[in-house]
Length: 627
Image (cartoon, rainbow, N blue to C red):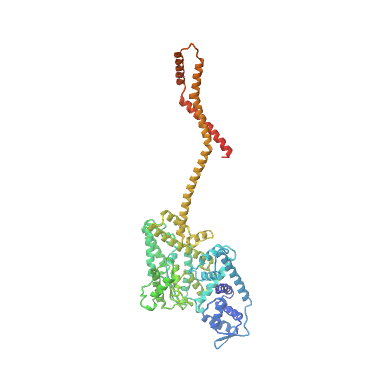
């Protein structure tokens, strides 16, 4: 795989640079290796460049290879130049350690890619093409703006292993080797290292302006400060060119709209998109709309203090040959960019910016990074993706119309010949862990913004309840949309937010929970009813007996006892008693009983006796069944 050659070669390049401290000396070692590996006797510079690309994955300009052959290997006596061809002399010697260096670097790379493959394939549970994964890893390291199939998995893997001994060092060697390689690729003349030759105008987008003013969080401010320090260093050299920072009219309008939206939020006429860190920092502490106006004045004063000025007024369409906004390009980009957040108007607005950059470049994009004249600096994925599209990008070492801050920081570092391992403090963007966190937080931030817009649309159309919106808002506010918030602990929650069907899944989950809750209540009620019925059935015989006892007591008291008393009284009368005396006696007895006996009290007493017996019988039954 070309990707494995490039990445493992980059690691060797970095190690050799530590020893040589000179780009041409390092390239000389690679050329010596090619001569030995390919058993070359005679060749030209084009053939040498081709062999280097084939063997090591390095696409290095032929002019640099030719300069290295002439000024290093011919002068050292290793090669002889005759008629434009180079022949190997008897003095030629190969570094005896280079083969073992390549073997060791290759083993390190294979360990990384195999472990990454195991992670992405979830130990064989998912189907992952290893060749695609290797290709995506290369683009992840060289083109962080490009979101490939495995970009998020690679970044997550890096963060999850940030504390593993040796892991970061291995990635660092590859990363720093790639910085050196891409520096060569975008610099046709290495003899000028240490000096920034030409004038360059960098147009900052609104996010970089906010980062410069510290509104996008501490890490983004540090990234900008690293970038800004290199610009100051380049500008201090009076022999070189000058790097200027500007912002376009489109960016100025975007900033105005941003602060106007902040005013409305403070006045309770709008809500904050949780992905907009700068918006949160502007609104925090503001009680009135006038407070936002004050913060805007402070912001503009801050960026002016950094010598970041608005663009000069220019007629960018005075030379049609520099216009990149053709209907064909627009249609091609529309077809290429299928993201749901992209539309024709948005693509057209970015092409207008590219036209401005191309006009200032006078159509020249292949002159090297320090001769390109102008570039648009943005962290937005769309302009960067469009800048590398075949519809507008020349390729072959050309400088794209738009790029990110990491790209320019790396190129400044290389052109100023800062190197590695010395006293110079490396920019934090070179740290592979920071890079992974930037990628994850950028993707989360973009996803959160899309979720926020979708929620607003669905709420307006009545497709979603306020309760569900509140729940999703709570979840996405917890998502790590700042790189400093991305940790081993917080990274797990990014997977849900990055799912394009996140809202639908939350709604479905809520519906299932509600359904489960309803079914659960019904089941509980049915179970309670069944248990109650079982209890009734179990205690029914006892209840019948208790009622029977109560009835017997009443019958005995009100029927049997009176009849027995009458019978006793009759048996006691003599033959001398007249019928009248008997009737009178019975009437007197009944009158006495009625005056003494209270049926209601007797009934209550009998009922309490029956109830007491009933309870005792129930308790005994419960003890026998173990409740």
